[in-house]
Amino acid sequence: MGQTLEDFVVIDFTSELYASLAGALLGDFGATVIRVENLADLREVDHDRDGMHPPERWNSLDELAHRNKRSLAVDLADPAGREILEKLVAGADVFLTDLPAATLEEQGWGYDALCRLKADIVLARGSGFGPEGPDRDLPAYDELAAARTGVMPTLPQPGQPPVYSGVGQMHTAVMLALGIMLAIHHREESGEGQVVDASLFGGNMYSQSLDMQAYLAIRDDRFLEPLSRLDSGNPMSGPMYPSSDGRWVTLAMPDTGKYWAAFAEVVGLDVADARFDSHEKRCGESRLEMMQLLDEIFRSKPGSHWKQALDAKQLPADVIEKYDYPASDPGAEENRYILNLEHPTVGAIQSLGFPIHMSESPAQLHRSAPSRGQHSAEILKERLGYAEPRIRELQADGILGHGPAT
Image 1 (tube, one colour):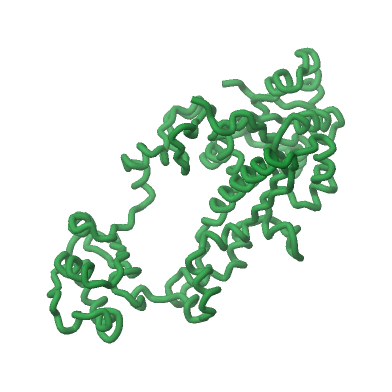
Image 2 (cartoon, rainbow, N blue to C red):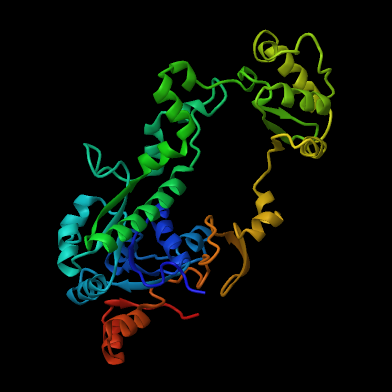
């Protein structure tokens, strides 16, 4: 069974998780992704550490961000190293990076320079704040982009500091991969390459689409103020109630007569109770009384009881799980959202899997994240036709890095 992107070559010149993850997503569906690590930059890091460079260690985020890639470690400050990258670009479809646009121009990797190597190249860039405007060259840090969205103060309880949710990077990674695919499709139709930009600012805004879009529609500052969990308009949708074992029950039921009847039966309330027998009372004059009563009711039994009872009535509600839940959830494994793997150096591991299901061309794990320069010789030999003596010469001169094979 073939894969959708098996004929595409991506040069991955990234260092940040969100941009690197976009390359991994393309590799999941068959693209040849060559991760380029600049030995000149790495030596500067070593120098800053007084020459003390710790050995590479297995890193779970690296495993996610660099799976299905091959690693080329090369000194781009040396003309021979730069020539290697230029030859690779000439045979590639996509140049993926998270360097600022100004830095790319300074180093000779701007779009016009890339087009001289490959006329229809797609330059895909993960940025901090987008390709236009006064902040286009600011550092790409997710925390700073999240702070700009205005959403962080709405997440905590009143009186508590803003909450950084950390979800913007994942949205940006998926958007960057999607943008690359749209650019590839456009190229096949028109023969033209282009520049794709997906920013952490945009990714953070789209990660909070419900809040952002609602605010843009109603322009109500009250809407974006942090709310107590007992300040929700509908006691059956939004509030979270603690159970006797410390787990929280979250509800997502519209306030309708159908849901109210079934819900009242589960929690032991009288469906005809005069305090709660209409939508106006449940969500208006008796709202707080009902929520305080539900708070007491849910505290009387463990979360497992409530999950079973609510599921039996097919009510949209659940208990809030901890991180260990997806790791053992059979549905997460069957859908390949979680992968159980045997890593070549650390043994049995679990890793996040594939968020996209395709029936005819599914994502596949071809290789674990490589060590630095693990495939340098292989890439030069197979893709550029370099002979063994030349490869050994480049390695001996420190221009080409090499790591252990697996």
